[in-house]
Length: 75
Image (cartoon, rainbow, N blue to C red; front, side, top):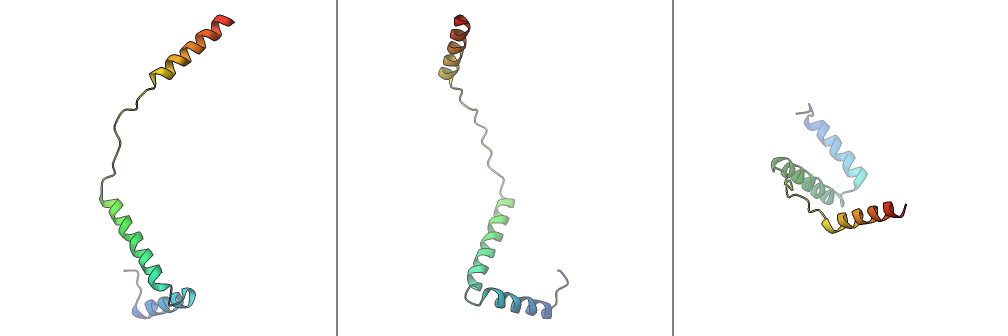
């Protein structure tokens, strides 16, 4: 895959154990596994797109028009 043999994998494992400690390895493995699972799930499922039209606030537009006309009449 990446040209890593068994010796290189063992060296990498030893370095990881030294850096993180044996107690945290299951937690790290679980987190990596969940991340990979979520990534695969998100790439395989089509994304949901919301295509509902937005509702316009007709009342606020009328109020804005009324305020604009009031300003023009006062000027």
